[in-house]
Image (tube, rainbow, N blue to C red):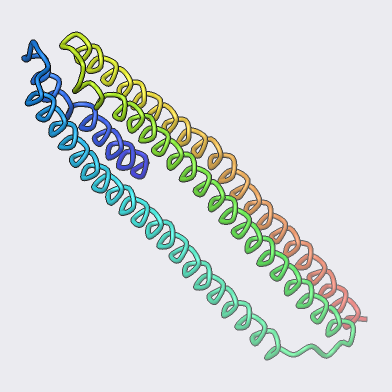
Length: 263
């Protein structure tokens, strides 16, 4: 959400400033009642001044958007790294516990051949269940991250296209607007209004496209997270059931060995 707020605010501010900066020129154009060479020259200067400000504002907006994306990428990387580190730590802890339990069982010793075979089968079953759980969870994480990267790229492509379309529209309107300098007062006023309307329309369309891109991203990520979480839950449940079954088989083997020893 922070990406959306920061990115859209930056783009919206740039659009508002771009829309507002010609207003000085609009007011100055309206004060003259006739078009003289001096007025035409001054009008051209105002047009060029607006273009300079336009380029400066766009450069600043590009820098803000780039930094926003850098920060977003860093945040995603940090989250993924933290999750990976936590997963590695938990697996190491589980491995240590499993090994300790095996050592304790080995110390007890198993004389009956059938019991030895049961222990071997039990350990092989647990190892296979752990491997399957790890494989499923790792694959789930990779699928989610790959899909997330695609969604991020799609959102950025849409935003970039919206910014370009807005700028192209404003540039086209500007090229028409700057020809007002040789026109009459009425023509200049009409050109001013047309330019204002064009920049407003370009800004509105751009903001709508950017908002739609963010909504598409949010709508895409929500089911991806749900699918990831469900897959992880299923993997853990499957593992727990496999362990439970193996333990029951092991208990049955121990009981059978004890019953045989009594005979």
